[in-house]
Image (tube, rainbow, N blue to C red; front, side, top):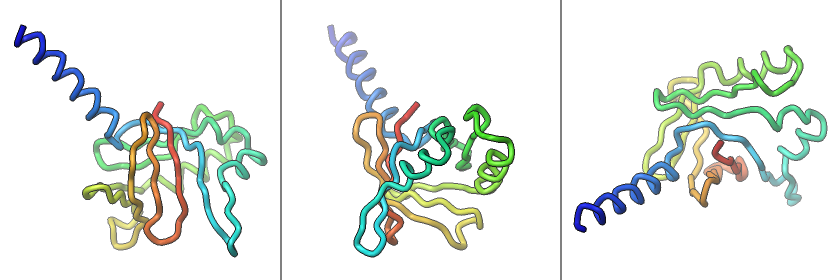
Length: 137
């Protein structure tokens, strides 16, 4: 009986830890920003002009790389090439709940406070970058 309970507890803990990891493939579902007192979702605006961007995958890899993968998005080749190039050198690090991305080996970067809600990761910019919500794939 003790072995069975230990097994169940181990499975529950491993599932909880997996759900709380930034590492994985993510779909951006929202990027709330504010300009001159007006709040707007810039991701929704992007999807109106480029519906294919809905299929872009954000890859946060265990090796510390942060990539935009537009290969299967259906977007035109030039758009895919430009978007992927912007993130070709981006790295990430997590210190507590502070997630930072940088393409300059952290000489400069963008930092966010990360919170998980189910299969969603909510990143709130620490310097006014807005709130980005990703859904785990």
